[in-house]
Image 1 (tube, rainbow, N blue to C red):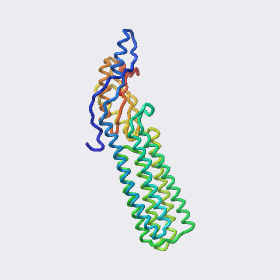
Image 2: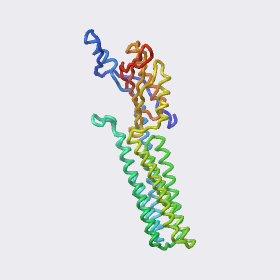
Image 3: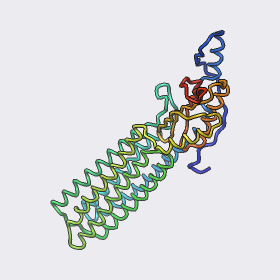
Image 4: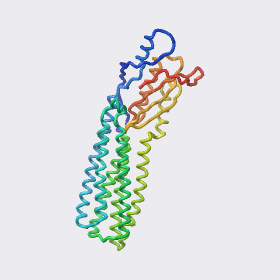
Length: 353
């Protein structure tokens, strides 16, 4: 199974809940109770789905650990050259890399929280902690942009000579390579496991790579007798960081507002239309909880089918969605009867989870 394949799992269902569904009409009261017991919403057996979620969190933690080590090593190399050269620009880049390494902390906390089981208070679990971590990361990117702009303006007003320009340029290049590698790694895995916060953190690492390039280009300009090259390039890099900030903030905003790719909605609708017994597809709602999707969908079935037949259609619709829609961990299917003329009466026969 590839890392992007949907989880394969069994189809055992428990019906031990005692919620009642009111069935209108006359007759002994025990029949509504029995029908409510048989067709009440119940959970889809999901050991493999839980394993997939835990594996996603484990991959996220592994990415954070490796990228933290790479960034700390990069910052330590730069710190040694700062001690030799006295470069203020490189000092700022070094401190920035240390700060970027530390962004792994809120994400690690979020991934750890995401492993906790749902409770009666947090009924959807703790996956939203990743989005809160994303807000912290966006704030760090904004602070990075502000700091970079401030340092660039300061150096533009009061240029400073830098010693050991060759070592400074090398340190800037090392900083760029380290940050770009971490950025690519975080963004790739973040998109694979559906973690917007990890993607935002990767974009943050990329901004630090741009800052390191500013050190490299500034050192080159100083070597050519143009000391203002460093602050001018720093201002250009600040503008680039602001563009990255915009993209990261937009991604986190979309996640907090329960936005999803419209292509996922279209894919879910297409999957449902292939389920035998589904006459039409109504509302389809998807939302991200951490790096997993949850779905609520409405389908129409024939108005003259039995509850058992409608239940079977709802079960199959749920199975198809979970198997075929990437990152979907749970689905709730509402089955409504259509009319003799094919129109939806909007009177739900049952709800299946």
